[in-house]
Length: 301
Image (cartoon, rainbow, N blue to C red; front, side, top):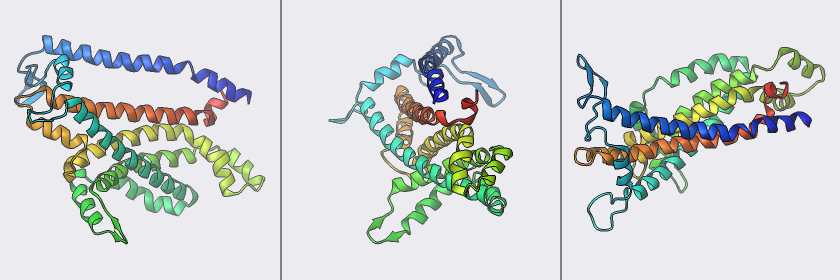
């Protein structure tokens, strides 16, 4: 018990510092944006046919205050049109919910695969190469297949909806870091401690819960962060690939079409996607805070 109390005391002061670093990072990016716009060349920098640095014209790179002013304006000139802020917030919530479903499915699938591979060496040899190979399939080729396969699922009154295809693709990207990271963590338990558990006739579940899982937390937390980022990216890209309406991916695409006469509009949607990433990263950090007390490395320090 004293050790756990010490761990909580060590982790609590770190949160304000991390929040300040996060806010400072955003401010630094904003300053860099405006400095480059003020000092950079209007036509950008090219190396042959390759654009090395972007253009700084208002059409390609609007000022940040112009982007934030656009949030308070209607999306278009039609009657009853919502503000850009309301439209982006609604689309971001849709994508966030889908990404969360995909992330949760990926965590469950990845954890089951890791448990199977750690308990059965033959399963690891058979499955791990295919787990790695699965990530080489491009999303642009996978998305139509998932939509087609989903439309053929008929079970009573169940109807496969389009958002489920997007969530499936997000989960497909999320399960890989979980399965690989958790497998490595489960195998990181010291051999001497495994032998000690065997000498006490501890069963597989007891060894898993009391030894392997605490040892795996150090590897699991980075895997959860990577999986969350992959789920968000997968959901946004899959929305575009599957043609799903209502999410931030299609919003970025739709606003980008109008970027010629309204350059701040697509950037407002892009910032919404960035906010989704920040929210997901914060949620995973909270999960990590709850799991941190079980990290074997910190308890021994």
